[in-house]
Image (cartoon, rainbow over all chains, first blue to last red; front, side):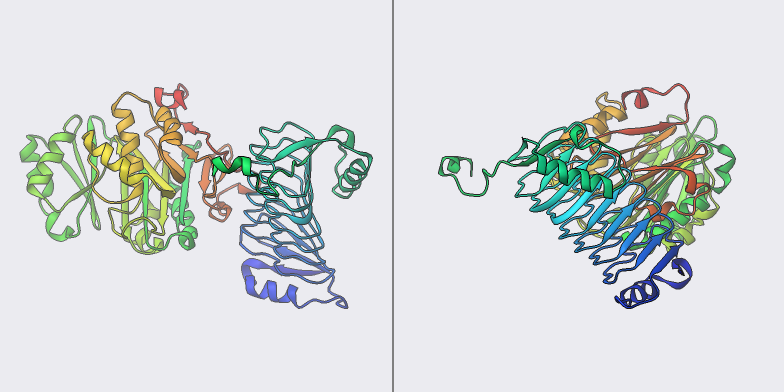
Length: 227
Length: 309
């Protein structure tokens, strides 16, 4: 286990050490102490290592992650796991706005609540939020799954392309072109797998599925007057 | 981008350390606002007096004999405590308007930063650390306070463009964001007789609240209507004699974090600003919801301002 004191040794040293790891490394477990809300902790990793952050972080924690498993024992600021490609990011507390934005792959688990714009423009990432999410979540989402065990805020899935949204609680309002859809067996299978991997005991049958009505894909001349 | 910090003490044994804690929070927010900085602090009040905090670019000449000259004009004894470019004048309660008129006559270059029974506002251009040092902010005590670090986007970097803004007796406002309808609103408010001194967007936000309250709204009501009437991005933190409040616009893209323990309620633009507060590890930490007015008060029986919020 490698222990890194962020307050004493600085952010650049941390990220360059973590980014220098590769598939053959024997330094597979890292612990970061004294994060104290700092920004850009453990970004740009590309190795199958495990990183634990002992406390809360600021902006852009675990951004652009590939392969690594990053656990935050606290809350995270805006943009956690932004543009994640693969691997796993687990947040014990809450996440601020645009968690998992533009993510292409991997799994982001938020055990508390996520605020506005969770999963905005997601492109294949899986996001599981144990609590609630804020307004404009999954805006222009293109691929992947967003699972919300609590409630969703206003304008869920506005201008959605093809991501699947699963919400167990209430949805304050749906965004443009986002509709409720049937839950088919294959969706229950996806949900069951994601909930198990995210450590949630919620039942897949308790969720509703939302997705794109696909009415914004093509220009409709009848809507010309609206422009 | 700007930085906001706020601290409201529930445990008054921390009052002597208020300035020290707020200064640490303020300096941590330097990255968000290196242009200018300011602090509104609610400290001791003297019975029957109104405190007027004034600023001058020429304190060495303007502040000399100011209390005596103002006292003669008002026919009363005026107290004066100078602190770098600011000085706090204590005039008899009810004499603020007379004092404002007299100051314009005897010291035309002096600008009024705040008025109230306990509120004092100190703000200047420069790095937050330098501003804190020149006023010895870390030595100040009080029941609650609000600080701001500015990165200007809408108007010039000047003392008068720095935050906090005084909105009424013992009331102040700080802002992170930008208002897009401030020009039309400024014209409207000026027609209504509200004094607005700069081209700054936040001053219009402050003047809007003042105007609503002049017309009978409580602070809570004024904050509620601000969500509809102000166009743009804002996280506002407001201070009153008894408490402080927070409101964010419906988009809520400007960051905000709050923490509450048995000893205090704290606000920071980022969690970083809160990390050195006592007991923060066990505090309840959360992000305030959009379009929601939050208020904390020292009064067990809230005033009408707080009721409405």
